[in-house]
Length: 491
Image 1: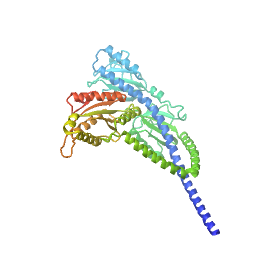
Image 2: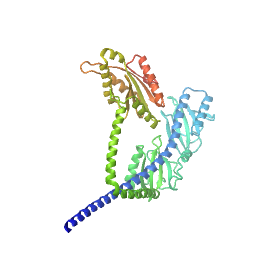
Image 3: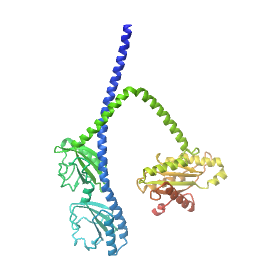
Image 4: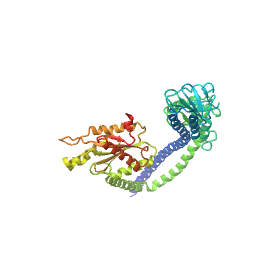
């Protein structure tokens, strides 16, 4: 009896020892994960702050570029000096530049305040030669323009060499990137080119900036980390890393500001970063201890039952949702699901570029009348089965009703992609055939509209695509037409 009791006690002891070891192992793993997560959290927070300030500068540059191109387009056909002056003055008022100059191919200039003369006579500095696209240049002195540190923006007006010379003050950038209150008092913010050469760094008291390049004074211990960071900067990535310069330790964060490969660079005292990380992981560690305590009491029963319940509910919900969203004939999204998903995308990504196609099978009634409704269904079923091969799985393809289909392409990145994607769809219908023994080649009329240019919500975008569809039918069917006629304007 005693031997049996001893065996039972030993078994329970070994079981408790195993559980204790498992808890200790889990605690250690969680501790390591918490340390790593706290580090990532602080890195993410500092990068987000850096991106926030960089965005302010980017917005200024985008405004200057857009307004400069608009004025340049007008100036390309404008010769009246008074009108040119008014346009330059308007450009100064509409953007954050402090001076605007129009220079023709012969070097004759007009300023926004009415000054005229020769580029050399007005002592404008060199390197303001004609350019083929909008160009940004940093100058410690803007020469005869105003004699102060500035960003010089050159906007081409004509191929002959006419151009706009726009001045943007570095003081404006300093104001936009004033990070006092975000980090420690010794933190600095400065703009650099893609190679780390710094703009307007003379007032910053840091070993990282005194040689005019963020990478030229890195301690040997941090050379590899500095090299990786430099590559990230040249690749226009947001990046953060801990470095040291003559013993001065900082976390260096940089992010692109959208022109010429330039970056906003922020340097934060490493003691401040370490304190933030310690604070983050301490708070998380306290919560972790409570979590482990609760795991001892409830882990087995709660987690197993909860996991089973969630899995069943998720599978049931997913199955029901898929059935509710699916068109039974084609296997694509039905009309309601298509509209809902497109609206969700537009709401979540209002500033992205996307495109909607609306297409009808040409002469579908004739197909039904001559070949039978079963064959008409086969046309729709085959179309639904194969059309998705031309697009990404994330794009939205649905049957809107009858022989009408809607295709919504997400996040096109560049405007030129609209025509490329349209050609994919045109080619698809050139090769589209239905029938096992007797091949039939249905055609389609397709209307295309670009979001948000042609419509900023679903209804407006669909209306634009539908009007483009009407164009395609009016032109003789079996073709694709854009709402803004960009397919014809290209040719």
